[in-house]
Image 1: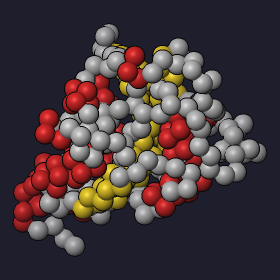
Image 2 (image 1 turned 60 degrees about the vertical axis):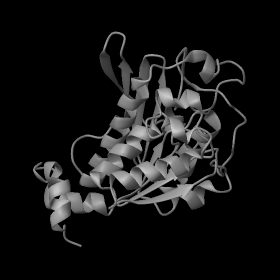
Image 3 (image 1 turned 60 degrees about the horizontal axis):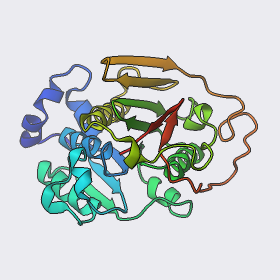
Image 4 (image 1 turned 180 degrees about the vertical axis):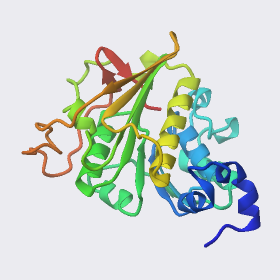
Length: 274
């Protein structure tokens, strides 16, 4: 459907962009994005994608809002404490933009349900806080040919990468989780509130660029951010021919969950996902 007068006004700053225009905004309005995790990363990603007019946003999260979440999870307000995150998120996103259809899934992702969750979406944003979900999302997206954005944050640092079918996946970089208990828990590590906001916004930007077909995505690259020195570094990565899931002779042939309730590791640094 062509844009109506209200949409032309709402999205006017997009339409002014040569890389977007009316046709690009129509692509955004037809986009379907699933965000797995409604926390520190998922909150800003969802908020900006709803503001941009993404037609359908799916939100997956099984947690209730906790008081300690509010320091960084900007979709949730003080009265939302003890409420399901997906309900809190749905209310804010619908209030922000009635053009957006919000679908909620008050569940954690599992090997049994993830294929069904992602099948109707065009782009997946991974914004979880544990290895079980992180590797499972990667594997499900690779099996099903789904593009996705992966990210993590810790203390004053963050990182993100984008995968398209044929580019390096998460397992090309980290082929398996670290030994159980080798990484401090998220609550022990801490994270400065705006850090997931910055990285989550980058994830939203990557998703919009994907649908618009403009610019260079973070494929075969990891963007690393250190806000103490305020430096952004891009590290080139290659698709690993020995990758256990997307390599020449894959050893992972079915979805599997790992019992690994710890944060992401980048070298010697653990990463907080939400």
